[in-house]
Length: 351
Image 1 (cartoon, rainbow, N blue to C red):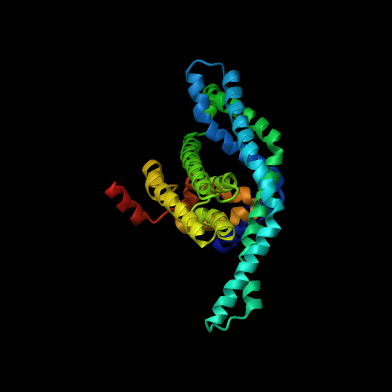
Image 2: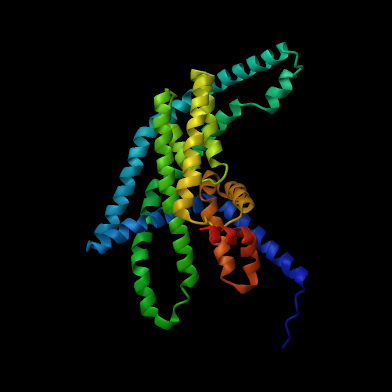
């Protein structure tokens, strides 16, 4: 019998790197399948509190599951009713808005040239084209629309996941000592559940405020911009900036610079209040990831899974971090993914 040959540290690192590359490539190829599965999983996690509330009130499991999923379907239909026509209308007028933005950009460059600034018009317009933002929004909305075409499949998966969530504790009791440790899984579920619920409520409040504010200012498609603000509030750090740019640009084209400034002010106010007051108050020390990791996760998951990957980048990265914490050999990876230890201690002492 041959004794297994020892593997050097360099070979071990190369092997791990190769495995990671293969996993990423597999996720990229399986994105059409993974997107509805991930959406279903996170919708199910958000639905757990009302489900357990109904169960504690003595309602039958089947009735409780269908009541919760029925509420989700009604909310989805309500959003589609208000935002669907706005998305279609905006897509039809997209070329007109792009042309008007390009015209305003040309006028700005001409005005700067009149002041003595020698600016090459062609190269500037090719390199920095503000109208490309509108095109990006159109592509994003179409991508999200494609993801939601599997709405029936997503709802079905959510129903089965909710039934399984109720049955899983009973199965664990029956397995008794043969069941695997649930400590890491419970911690993951609690962390992701807390993050998603709080983030969803904050995002809903942000979207409602933006919709109301832009309606008062008279900007076109306020419900659409409120929906985009709601979705991009799940994208940490830069999500609110991305959501604000197209709405402010549209306000500039439609109503002028003064209304655009008021629109930008509304975004600044709501994000300062939600990001610096409300979220820290209820989310505590945050998601347990460093700022750099949050940004890189946004890029990586967005590349792998598209717009849905951007929206779910933080929960997905938290899964990786908690999985690394479960084994002593990979604890160092979890530490690298986490925030600054010293800063975290200071925050805990101040609180």
